[in-house]
Image 1 (cartoon, rainbow, N blue to C red):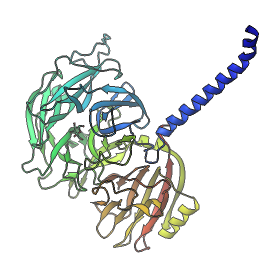
Image 2: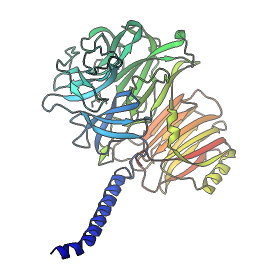
Image 3: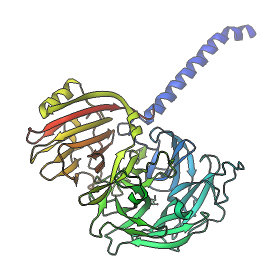
Image 4: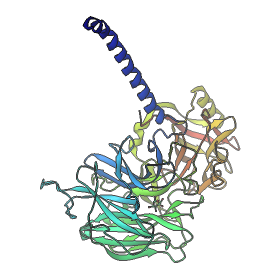
Length: 524
Ligand code: FRU
């Protein structure tokens, strides 16, 4: 028996080795498969499975960016809301971590909110005994019960890996069933915490303050009489330099309210007001008759800006959910639903008609470039298309930078994800002074009557117009004129519809410069 066993040993070893290689191959291809489905964004964050909506608690702490998000761990439609969690060292390449804050079944769900670093342990919830660093992470979220919405704290003393609910929750309760989405920040001039949260149906932002994150006092209400239809959700409040001038006198505050519905493209969208903040009250300087929107596409909502980006970096960066409540539960992905935008840097710029929010993708996004496919300029439309053809430029993950000079009255731009019967148009209308995305014939559009359409925004007209386009497997983000005007739309083209070309109604317009990169996957 021993002899037989001895003879079999090499065979056993071979079989074992064979099986482990086979299992590794199956595991690897399954893991690959999950982030390789036809409409799976390659460089925009998506959960491996199930439903996701708002980004929550965006924060930088000890070398890591944290992305929490509204997540249904049990299915691909909204429900059982909990905080999902991922970390990254560049806001682009994310690693999934276990669920951070699960719903409390039968009691409440974990709705949107924010996170802060409690640097000096003002909450006394930080248990690190090192006097040089008493800090910990605190999450402030809405505990959403059947008839109540209140603000709760959860804390983590291990760099966000595990979370405990504070034992004396809730910390803020205004006895209102639609009081939600707290965004908390440190207000240095008065050395205190400030919270902005909404009364959603009343379309009001409530401003509260606290010295310890546990006891909150209501200080003021920001609202506009007759503020249009729908709800206000996910507010944010932050200070930005104006026109790149960082002197204190050149700063303005921005109040962000996410509106559901009422956005220019229909459904949900991000509105903002520019004004002043004295620690207790926000006063809008944006005239009441001006509606300012951060993004004129149909799929940019529920923004959350990062907390605790180091002062030497100094950027204000936000992420939005790239969907729309009009069809968020019916988008045609099955395993997972919902994606997050590229992180975008926010600035304020003065234009002849007032101060506007300007957004550009974070410079870290250059790390996504895997190959320059084309670089040239001074092309006619025909020449540009010949170059694109000669270089065999096509694909579903591309970054395009172009300066285009339209002839008067022309409509010019790109046909993206072009296939036999489909295309997504991104262009400018010189006649209308407009930037647009037209996804009417972009592929699968029939899952919602609200999906197909053309979405547009007026540009402060200059020629050439600069376009910066990020195409992923099921999304298009367009930043025009250095982020002055932004449009974000999801698209669901057929696999293989990967063509790219320029179009121009008159044929006479010029492409002054054109650079195209292939972008890689963040999951490989
Ligand atoms: C915004 C929102 C928030 C709420 C969350 C629930 O999309 O409706 O107001 O906290 O989603 O998932």
